Image 1 (cartoon, rainbow, N blue to C red):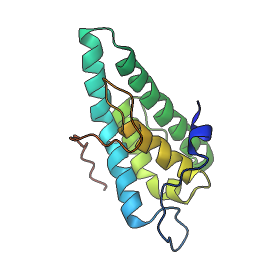
Image 2 (image 1 turned 120 degrees about the horizontal axis):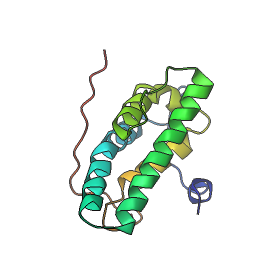
Image 3 (image 1 turned 180 degrees about the horizontal axis):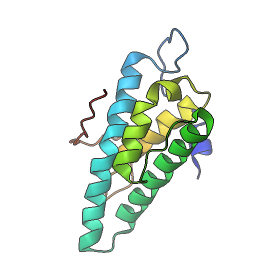
Length: 145
């Protein structure tokens, strides 16, 4: 089941939005927090994999890398931005966060936001349930210059 089939009937931001962005301020903040929580989720799953073979942790790691790298490629190709450098989860998350305003105005903003929220709702030990939000998250602090 791909992202397109998962997101067809879903809407990330049900609020009235003024201007060019696809999301209101509250939904933009949610996507930002979810995006910046992915490096910690990846590290948690990676740590679990160092102890034992675990299909769910492997699937989560693979999904994080796949989704982040594909969206980084879109930004790089369409916007001509400098690439995020080494393709590690932290770099890709920061790169996408730095380009989030552009992504929020992109025609595929809805797809991006839903994909990020779906991954952030996963854990290393079980698949994400509809509407499941992790009880605790560790966020990567990013200071924009």
